[in-house]
Each structure stands twice: as structure tokens, then as C-alpha cells.
Image 1 (cartoon, rainbow, N blue to C red):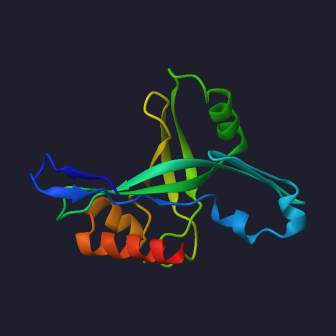
Image 2: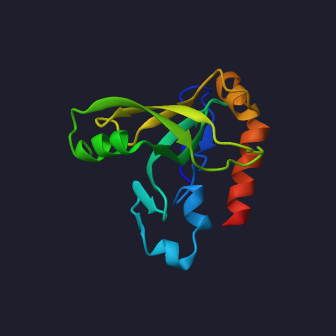
Length: 167
């Protein structure tokens, strides 16, 4: 971890690691045979099932931490329609490209139960790196509530600990 003096409070801090996922959740559920029909890079994933093809991109979600100068970052995946995915890929190296898409959150995050995927807005601005996502505020889920209202430093650190212990 990197130590630095926080401009917000003047105290010495260590950066929290991002909670990052190497692939979308469905990728980890594939059989060896299904993996043969799958493409995965650090930013893109295409899963070809017998009856459909699913498209995913890697994105960033920033969670506000109310009682801290730091925010918690997630490196997560969202699914896109084929049309949106193709437009994103076509403009992947275009530094001037900006766009927006509808997507579905495609990872399960620590401290939450997921019975269904959360709808998101995906904001692409290639001058700043990976796309950012915001869950739809109208979707009723504890994670969405926490995204818009923030979480405590204790919750953020517990989530980091959960992920670090898994790895």
C-alpha cells in the first residue's frame, strides 16, 4: 500500500486497494467446454452459449465513504447489449470518445445478497480510462441505497478485508 499525507485531513494514510474482479460472475460458472467459446481480456469478455451470446466490459464504480477522506473503488464488470458493446469496442482506442450505455451489474459485491442483477448507467470518457457506472437510483436494493447515501469507514474496511481474505 502507498502511504501519503491526505490533503483532506492532513493525516498520513494508506490507499485502500480497489475491490477488483478479473471477470464477470457468469464467467466463473462456465464449464470447460463453455470456456472454449469464451473470449476474456482485462477489459472485455464475450461468452457464447448455445442459445445466446453475452457481452461484458470492465468498469469502475466509486463508493462514497461518509466518515473518511477516501472512497472505496470497485473494478467490476457490466453486461451490455451487442450494439453497445460493438460501439464501445470500435471506439476503444479513440481518446475523444464519450458515450453512455445501459448495463447490468455482473459481479456480486461483498456484504450484499443479489437475487437479480442491478441495472446501471455506464459512462464512457476515454480521456480518463475505464468507464464509470452508477446503479439506477430507482432500483430497490441495499447496495443502491448505500451507493447514493454512502457507507461507513468500518463497512468499507470490512469489505476490503473480505476480499483480501478470499485471495
